[in-house]
Image (cartoon, rainbow, N blue to C red; front, side, top):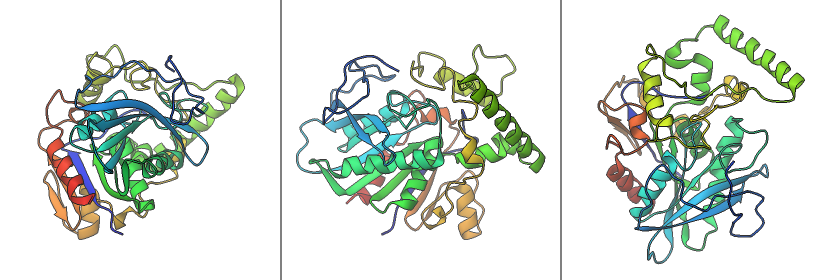
Amino acid sequence: MNKIIFAAALLGWMLTGCTGNGQTKTDNDMTTLQLTQEWDKTFPKSDKVDHRKVTFRNRYGIELAADMYTPKNAKGKLAAIAVTGPFGAVKEQSSGLYAQHMAERGFLTIAFDPSFTGESGGEPRRMASPDINTEDFLAAVDFLSVQDNVDPERIGIIGICGFGGMGVNAAALDPRIKATVASTMYDMSKVNVEGYFASEDTPAQRMEKRKAIAAQRTEDYKSGTYKRAGGVIDPLPDDAPWFVKDYHAYYKTPRGYHKRSGNSNDGWNVIGCQSFMNQPLLAWAQEIYFSEYAFERMTGRHVEGVSAVEGNKELMIIPGASHVDLYDDVAGVIPYDKIESFFKANLK
């Protein structure tokens, strides 16, 4: 069965970054997670949807925490969407905003914290894994597919930022995923191997990174703790690159700061992204995947800074937008109408 990819991409660059208190609550009363019940999102609560906390487990036994958003007065079985990202963020930030907007438009949605982050389980904290984080999407589909008010034949996903790549990877694996949006996507394996803007893209530079991570593993083992890489730098130096300033404007200000967000605080573990350096995502995603660099590889036609359509795949460019402009509604450029029409056309 064909998957359908809609890439809400940006001109320019791609991204960042290598538990709450409250009552315990879940559908089956078997959760071990402590889930905050008060509204603690970075965006206002909508009066058009119902909201509750839910949990589910992935195939590694890690329990994931999610916010479920359901259209008020919804009847029958609904199309459903699972959302996560950005990489290093939590569900109270961008993913929850996307999920709430999509619920306002008639979809049942969940925004979830990936393994080892936010309110989700998994130890040690702030680790990332190309396998486990892809599995997190598949587990979200497991959960949605058995809900009484969800049509299991109409499930889609949204991955934001680094989780756009993980979402596309999940869609390449699982035919239950009928439509995928990768918003302001980047490929975590590519950026870990090459560095930002291919700034570390030589064999010698990659070897130095391998040596540094290996040395840090030894130090972590000696100390019995994991050194954190640090989140978005703060205070912001005057000579910080423009994209760092962009991150700071979201993660380190009231606009997007959240106490459980790695990017807002002390970041991933230094060794947290090691596996991405030799476990490339999207190895088979040419069967479904679509972006500027993938489009050229698939068709031989160079595309730069323009939207394009190829079969059931669509690349959408937001002219003049920065990466972080697609994190929230401040710039007003997230194409919710287009995302809605894409899902409604393909989740039927």
